[in-house]
Length: 448
Ligand SMILES: Cc1cc2nc3c(=O)[nH]c(=O)nc-3n(C[C@H](O)[C@H](O)[C@H](O)COP(=O)(O)OP(=O)(O)OC[C@H]3O[C@@H](n4cnc5c(N)ncnc54)[C@H](O)[C@@H]3O)c2cc1C
Image 1 (cartoon, helix red, strand yellow):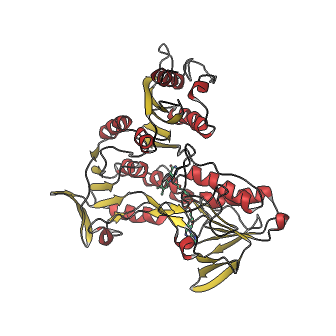
Image 2 (cartoon, rainbow, N blue to C red; image 1 turned 30 degrees about the vertical axis):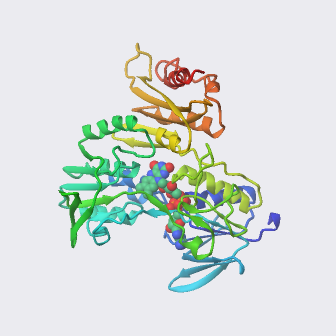
Image 3 (tube, rainbow, N blue to C red; image 1 turned 90 degrees about the horizontal axis):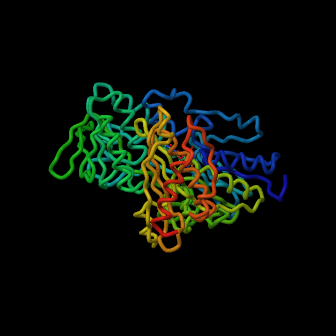
C-alpha cells in the first residue's frame, strides 16, 4: 500500500464514515481498511426517518448494505471504547469482551446524538410515550405510541421537528409544536421568512405554539402532556426534537481535544492526536464565510468532511474550507432552503447585514401552472459580500439556494453573480430568473 500507511480504521459508519471509505478506496484501491460500527447493517439513512413515519419510505429501505467484504474492507461490529494513541490501537467491546484493533491512521466519524434538555420529568417520560427520532428503533417505539393516541406534542420546531409533525398529522387528530423561540426553523431562516412557513403549517392543521418554553413533561408512568408556565397541554404521545450534540465520548475518552461543539480538528481534519482524523457531526465545524464555529450538523457537510478525512488518511493533503450550512426541508408542499448566515447570525458575527427580498412567479405571467417563490439574499453593507440566502416556494427553492451556496463557497462577489446565464424556457423558468431579481434588489440596496 502507498504512502507508508499500512492500515486505516474508520470508527463509525454513517455519511462521513462511508465518504471517507470511498475516498480512501479511490485514492488507494489496495488500502487495508477496517470499519467499526455497532449497527447490524452497514448503513442507515437517518434523513429518511420522518418520511418512513409518514409512510412514504419503506422502513426496510432505510438500511443499506454496501458489501464491504467484496470491497476487501473488514467490518467489525462492535462498540468503540477509545483510542490508545501510543499503542496505535482502537479499544472495542464486542460480544461482551474487550478487544483491540491496530491502526496506523484512524478516522473518527461517530456522528451526533439527540439533545435531551434538562426539562423536569423528561428522563422518566423518554421511552414511555415521549421519543426522540434518530434511529429505526425509535420509529417502532413512535408507531407503538400512536395506537389510540389523538393528540401529539412535538418539542422543537427545527427541520426534523416540523417534518415529524407533518408525518404525525396523518395519524393524529391534533398535533402541537412547541418552540421556545418566537419562530419556526430558528437559526436557519430569518423571522420574516419563517412567517411563510408558519402559514403553511397552520393551513396544514399543525398547532404552533411559538415563544413557548416547556417547563415540565408530565408522565406518571406514561407521557400525558407538557406544562408551560401555568398552562398544561394534554397529549398521548410526544416527540422530543431539541437538536443534536456531537458524539464525542470516544474522542474524550482517548484524550483528544474537544470543545462544546465537538472534536477539534484542523483544516486537514486531523485531531489533536497525530494521524487520527475526524469528520461529520462529531466535529466542531466552522463556517466557510469567516471560519468561525457554527453548530451545523448536515449529511452533506458530513459527506464532504468524510472525503477530506479519507483522502488525508490515505496520504493526500486535502483541505476542508468549512460549511455554508446549505439545507433544504419540505414543509407540507413547499421547499424551504437556506445557505450561509441568517440576518441575526450575521450580526452576531460582526457584519452589517442588508437584505433584498422578492416574491415572484417562477414562470412567465403568460404561462399557466407556475408557482411563486420568495427569495431573500443577505449581504454585508460595507463590503457587499454575500453572507447568506433563503428561498421558499413550491418548486425551485433548493436549486437556487445551491447556486448561492456555490457563490459562498468560492467567495464570489454579489456583483459577479449577475454574469451567470441560467437555462430558460417558459415551461420551466423565467427569462430573468427570480434569483437575478433578488440579486439586483440587494445590489441596489447596498448601492452596487
Ligand atoms: C431524523 C433525521 C433527519 C435528518 N434529515 C436530514 C436532511 O434532510 N438533510 C441533511 O443534510 N441532514 C439530515 N439529517 C442529519 C444527518 O443525518 C447527519 O448530519 C448525518 O447522518 C451525519 O453523518 P455522520 O456520519 O457524521 O453520523 P451518523 O450518520 O450518525 O453516523 C455515525 C455512526 O457512528 C456509529 N457510532 C457512534 N458511536 C459509536 C461507537 N462508540 N462505537 C461504534 N459505532 C459508533 C453510529 O452507530 C453511526 O452509525 C437528519 C438527521 C436525522 C436524525
